[in-house]
Image (cartoon, rainbow, N blue to C red; front, side, top):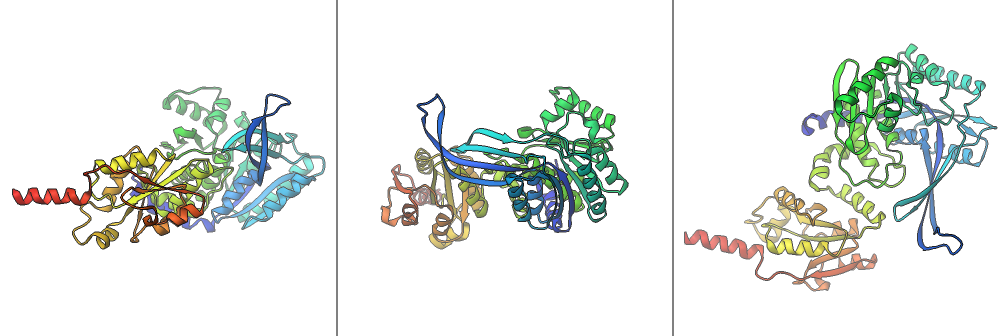
Length: 494
């Protein structure tokens, strides 16, 4: 895997070129509904939970979610799909029309039911899902219209994306669309649903997840060598030039007819919802390739985007700004728990949305000692996730004088991040963490008991937002100032 610093510059350049990408997407559109509520009791009528509905959210799903992600990345997209002449279809069309830089060529089938997936969610846990759909193959007239719409637009785009969810739009049509694109010199990227990969013959890139791959290859590979053998057999059998097998928490592996395998480990983030992660991968791959990225670069970008998507609730989209920040900060965030402010706010919001209590404490932590560790451990016992804010070197100098800090800010941050009690480290350059507290709005604000509550910066902010302030007992005999004084006295005595 390329060094992060070496690769980040070229990846950022690719992202900045996304607005120039033009994508044609064909596939099964659907409406994703998320109904949020709570469960407090069991029904007296049957041994089932009583779900008290609180709010509802509707968004584009299936191929529609691919288009949402393409739009969020700033690219231009022509979207072709089929909806029914029903309320769901009308709602779906209205959402498509709200997407920036998307030209919707929706065909209406009066005999067809539009697809809708409704998820019931309590405390960030999906309780069950109710689907309304048809898998019937669209009629010959609609197929002819799709082919003609594609023919008219292939000369205007850089790539063709086929998002197959097995709902009938691409059934019997995939081969024809791939042939049409190949004749026009346009690369085709396919997210497959069919277990028969012959329907995707001659595609430039296909992106099955591991379950889909096993079904298509009739294999259960346990080792990288077995995975490669099965992948290359499938590619040769169906003249597929490239294959990206996504493997969830195990990352993804790229196989190419004329290149060595490329394994990309998953980006370790806290997983809240995997819904739509495959759509995010497909969109990022396609836009990156359409922007001139190599296949390897596109795969790295797609992997980063997937890491962001699974850390968010619902079928979340990933914007170009999200992706750029992930590339800039990937090494810090994923491996060392050190967050820049904007990503810190996003992560705290995710934790709180998942019902987790977020605690906050701050300090210089110049020379880490037993008193600090005790304070942090006690703080963590009062919350589910602990955020530790530390003064930058410039802030410490203003507060403590020119001889401080003894330890540089990144060294202090890295040491704190190694402690099991600490879930996040954020640096602040101001004299106090007030602005950071306003941004993060923690549930519990903690400070050493050498302070009184009215002396704790941000106490009123947290309490007015419904949070609490706790004063943590300190271990006597420990302080950075006294430690430095003892060191200085020993040096003088020697």
